[in-house]
Image 1 (cartoon, rainbow, N blue to C red):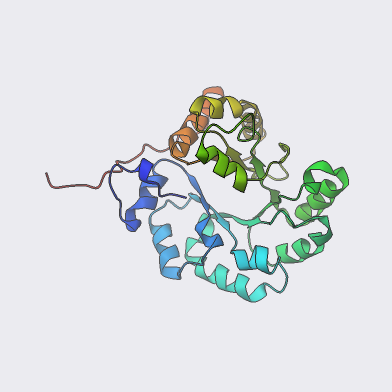
Image 2 (cartoon, rainbow, N blue to C red):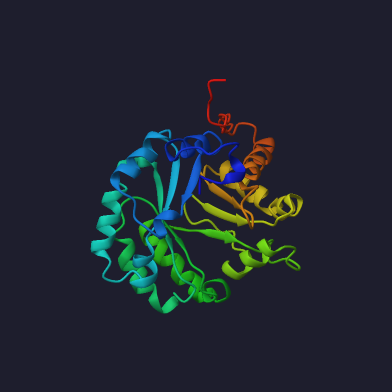
Length: 269
C-alpha cells in the first residue's frame, strides 16, 4: 500500500500519493492487484510517479492464485501482464501468494505456472506442511530453484507473541497465518514481510534477529527487499525507515533512503 490517512497531513490526489510514498521508501507491495487488475493508464501513472529503480512487488490476481489455483490461467495471466506492462523493469517480482490450503500435492501446478511468468517470481506459501515437514520444504525449494524463484519470508511470530493488546491486533491475528519463522533465502533477491504490533518498541524488539540476517545478506552481495507491517499500518512507513537506519548503522556503505517530500498539498497562502 502507498496510501494511508496517517501518513498524509492532507488528502493527496491519487496522482501524487505514490510519488510521496516513493520519496520515503524504495519498494512497495502491490496488494490492490489481488482484487482488481488496473488499466494500462493506471500502471503508466504509477511508473511516472516513481524512479526507474523503484521496486514493485506485484501480487497476482485472486482469480489466478486462489480461484483457478494456478491451473488453466494463461488467459487471465496474459491480461494481467499486459495491463502492468508500462511498469517495465520497475516490477521487481511477480508475487504469487497462495492460499493456506495450497499444499505439497499441488506443487506440479505451481511448477507449470512459474514457467509462464516473465522475469522474477516470488512465492508465498501458507500451508503448514511447508514449515513443519522437511520433505515438503525441500520439494518446494526444488520447484522454486528450477526457475530462480524466491520463497517470500512472512514473519508473524511477533504478532502472535503473548495476548492481543487491541482490537486491531486481534483482527490482524484472525487474518494472518501463524507459522514458524523461516529465514532461508533462495536467491540473490530475498523478500521479507515482517509483521509487528501496535507498540513500536515491541515491533522493534521483534525485528532484531532480522537485522543480523539482512546485514549478512547485504554483505554476501544479495539485494533484499523488506516490508514492515503493523496491525493498523499507521506506523509502518516510519518504522520501515527506522529499520533501514538500523541496518545502515551496521553497514554504513548502504545507500541512504531518499529524503521525504512534504505530504501536505501545496497552497498559495
